[in-house]
Length: 102
Image (cartoon, rainbow, N blue to C red; front, side, top):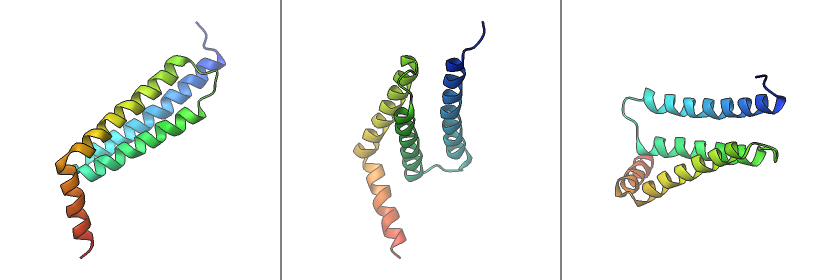
């Protein structure tokens, strides 16, 4: 089976998305003690990347690709809701702000 130009375009898009996730995973796994604030920033970067990728996705793109991006974006939104509800994240944010003011 020979790949069409549309197939190659889809593969390029998926490869780009996977590289962003690989970079995020590497960032989170190379720290000795990951912090909530850095995790939040990484998730925000992933979500921004997904939003931009969705905006750039051609109308002719396979619906499976679009659905996958939307689902990933929604999953990250779920994590943001957990951050917002966490008393630990709020405490860590306040403590970090106080530390920076000195």
